[in-house]
Length: 191
Image (cartoon, rainbow, N blue to C red; front, side, top):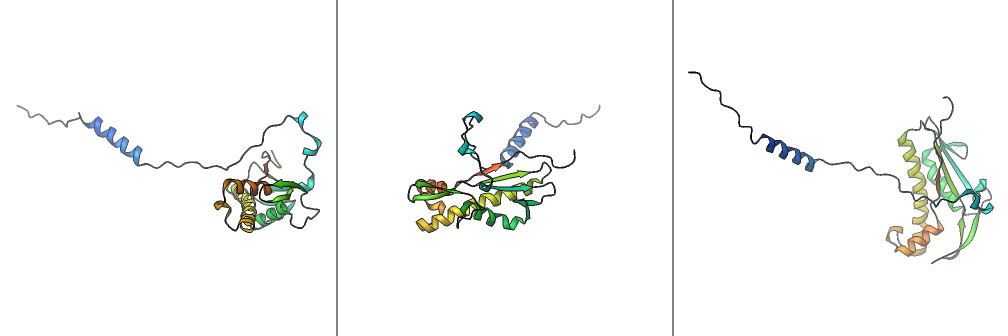
């Protein structure tokens, strides 16, 4: 008589596999993609655009990033380290410089009549621009506006912009609006 080889009980293998699957699903962390927070303007048909809505050249701060990840600000090569200060100077135009954006008087809650800039920051990059460089430029431009808001909050209210109530923050956003225009990337040179 031959001996039978004992079998491994397989009835609970499906249960064990299911439990392992649940364990790995529960304990695995998922990376959440974070993006850039942008509020898009309302679309206006071209025939409804008024002449005064056209942007004058002096009101546009042109920032280009080429395929070699080189930064050009107002057609001059610039270091990423200097971009924030140049953008702040452009948006604030503290001395009403004629080469910087125009300002118009506007009534703003908490501030009364304030001269508001008509400046727009225009960002364009090449299709071959490295993503890290693109994000670094974006961060500097957004940081410039955030620093202007922070400085104004401390000057007018004596506290940080983040500590202000919603109405105060809205008023500061009116004084220093975030006007960053992103042009469609294009292929520069070659095919």
